[in-house]
Length: 192
Image (tube, rainbow, N blue to C red):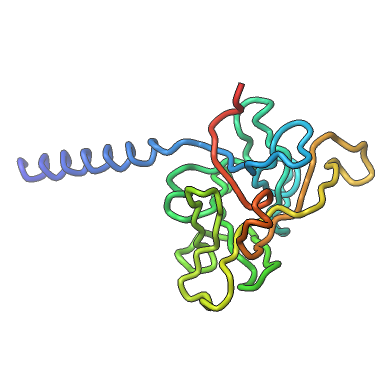
């Protein structure tokens, strides 16, 4: 009986420590440091489609951050633990970003999370969100998540345009000439 109680207590302690580790992560949005032409807010990494009808079969994009309305939304919410582990994981739908190729222009789509090279990223202190490929050809430049050069207004096809702005998101060579489109950070809420 004492043995069973010890096992139960050990299991309870382990579960409590596991739970505390997972609850310590902050829910964040990942936003572009340069506002570029942002009207309502900055640009955030975003799942295509409105939060109630996400379009999971197309690559992720950059979109006006919704934090001006309050908390990050389901199509922009990530957590700090995932980012620290090198993942782009959209929390609400539990899918991870995976690159479509190893060349400039490759996009990032959402798929089931796995521990594979195509899903490894690193958000550096400098703000570069680098595809962290350990097998990448060292003769080629590192590839960074890069917001597209052109924005357009969001909104449903055929419906009225909204003030929300959208840009593509893909991998491009990291470098100072693209810094405005490649430097990212995280936050839990909109600055006042």
